[in-house]
Amino acid sequence: MNMSNMSNMSSGSPAPRSAVPMTFHPAEDPPHLSIEVASDPSLLCGLRELVNRLARTIGFSEIQSSQVALAVDEALANVIRHGYDNRIDARIWLSIWTLAPNEHGPGLRVIIEDQARQVDPATIKSRELDDIRPGGLGVHIIREVMDETRYEKRNGAGMRLTLEKRTSTPGKASRPGVACLTSAPPCDPQRTFQTTPESPNSEPGKDHA
Amino acid sequence: MTDRPVLKVETSTRPGGAIVVRPQGDIGYHEAPAFRAAIREAYDKKPTVLIADLSGVAYMATPGLATLVEALQIAKKSSRRLILCGMNERVRAIFEIARLHTVFTIVNTVEDAAASVANMTK
Image (cartoon, rainbow over all chains, first blue to last red):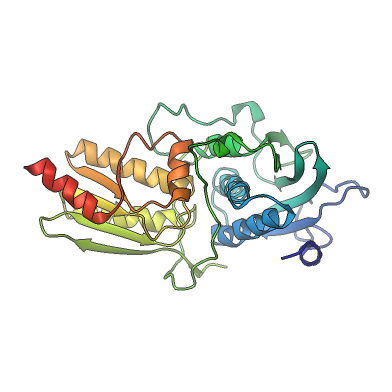
């Protein structure tokens, strides 16, 4: 999948169905890829595969690409679960820039925006890792694998998460001893069909795993 | 966009009564509930040992981890054993990042898990 093809996948003018459209990025720095997507968990598989392949296209290793895809997958799942309380008809905007090489190589910037409830970015934390219990690890994973992670309130409504990673500044998860995360393999067409995601049972601003 | 593929999970019982749960596919946010349901169904059969064979799992995100942590808690509360096996490097990596790789009993194969159980009962 080359960049020209990726550019053709852009959704064009954002958010015709939205009360509050996505941020309009400066004309001089438009995203290379922008997608408006429903808050439907069944779409996550395809999105992480797309991000993984895009990262591979611009020069990330298989391991790094899989890490970026995992971080985006975790972030989108958090928006769906905590922001939208598992509504599947809300909107999420995913914007991706390829970053020109600097001393740390080329990179990716990913911005995820929503219209969900706003939370104080300072409250978005992982649980303590020594506190072994289900949930609360997604934010930890995101921060571990990306170079930069920034949560903000959007003007008006919703949240914005900015993620960045360069090819030669691997996240802490790329350190020796941590092999690789996901190759974001294609969705398995042989799988059976089921419809209902897990019910939310955690607090807003908290993480799901 | 509702009828989406989720997760196929095979369950079998080994000689001696250990139950093997074998998910096949990604385990992300969308798929984890099916995995959780399969584990709970297996526990309902009250095995002394539950083996989660992850050899068919190419990708796991934190909802999959959460499901397994919950399964471990159930095992500890009910004096059962939970053994994980068949992880590829990518799946194992997320356990390491979350520092959960030391919390679980992790072996390479179902046979290794069965042998571990046999040794435990000798």
